[in-house]
Length: 441
Ligand SMILES: Cc1cc2nc3c(=O)[nH]c(=O)nc-3n(C[C@H](O)[C@H](O)[C@H](O)COP(=O)(O)OP(=O)(O)OC[C@H]3O[C@@H](n4cnc5c(N)ncnc54)[C@H](O)[C@@H]3O)c2cc1C
Image (cartoon, rainbow, N blue to C red; front, side, top):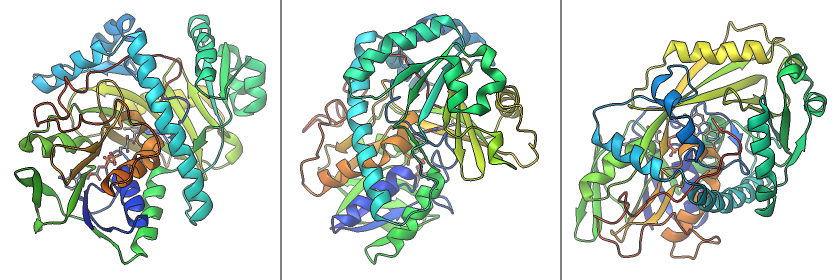
């Protein structure tokens, strides 16, 4: 079968990988000159399988004043005169209940654990260089309140299969001596030894290299999809900047742009861009920075060691899809690095970046079939796209191939046989609930 995959980010590439493995011919369309130019470029590098609690959590209500009015808050709303923003935000607020958060967390854990298994299989089988390491993740807390809340969640996370333990400030600094300069402000930490880090951009490039070695894969860059053509219950082609392209089956994996492409064919995807920032700091000495993935919970910033560099990521801005880098955000990130890891002194080669997380209100992606028999979705991975890429790539490839996915996709599928109004509409994808334990960039 000839499958057209729209979007050359980590989701489109992972989907292509499994489709090719299952014997399909895949043509990937990417509007930019380079693959992985969107959110998959310089994200937080966390394969955060155990920290999947959605942004929508009961704590959002107590944080509303800073969310609305503080310019420097790690999570903030920039109100705009867009109906879509308000619909999304209201759905998001409805998801901020403890019950819904727990349901969402359980669903995401099922997909993230499956993803972990697949990353490990891929890394064992294919020779891919993408700084993939089982570093473990340490979330450090700086207030009694947040630390006690984290302890309260430990047992719940354990009951869902997460291996985590609470440690004191001294042990945090023993595990990662680069934290010794901030020992005084650490109340405690939660260590998750099974978490991994890797370079998402490199993963995409390496996967592309591997795929291109197969005659079944073609990547057409600088080929933007302008319109999806439908006839009855089928998609009959794509109008692109390089003419009409058709196949037997289509998979939409265009990140934040997915909504614009699906809307004209009656699929109203509840995806909104959540802007975030990162800096990549080449390290003169590997001893200067952390050796494992660190999350500074108070500042909601994540640190990941990559080969010869440190990736620092943070901020969630709900508002607008501009891609310009705001210098004040970068300054805040760099300021946090200076205070947390004062032994890092060379900031002359810092690479700043900003990206748009394709987020659903409740935090679960949308995968699987639409009302069109040959049109499938792999969209809305929000802050977890790298973590969930292999799992959701595999389940979508299975569905396209007519096979039963190996995990339950409860809460992530469009309803069977749903019409365009219901398929992917906000009502259909009403958020479920939230639980706050850690933070992902
Ligand atoms: C600051 C930040 C930190 C993050 N940290 C982490 C992390 O630590 N761990 C984690 O798991 N996730 C993280 N994420 C989230 C993760 O990066 C995203 O969820 C993921 O990259 C989404 O992948 P995607 O393929 O869906 O989208 P993208 O990577 O954006 O890819 C979509 C592609 O589709 C292309 N496209 C768009 N429109 C069209 C069109 N019309 N025609 C053809 N092509 C088109 C785009 O050019 C783009 O290349 C982070 C995100 C940000 C912003």
